[in-house]
Image (cartoon, rainbow, N blue to C red; front, side, top):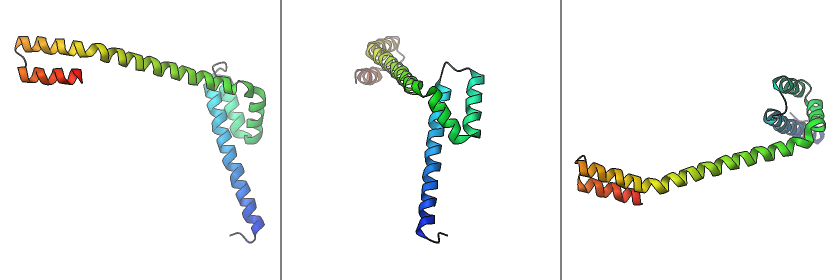
Length: 129
């Protein structure tokens, strides 16, 4: 397949360029869809430009909108972190109050005769664990 070392190095360089373009393509497309200041038409035009004229499209996008790429990525990371913290807080709050609620509901079931004392003890130990 390769008749000398030069053709192998050239093929390796071409593979590297293709891989680099592919990574840049996904990075730029992700930024295009992440951008809230672009409308649907603007996003469509950027996607078409980046796909039809690959290297030039990516280069022009980075020159034109590259300054805000990091800011948009940081905004998304902060929003994701805020949603995660909110979820963790909601789960922590519900679990801290749910132990007493679970014991109270199990006690009412025990009083009504729906469960036995052994089942109540099991539910209580699970709630306290």
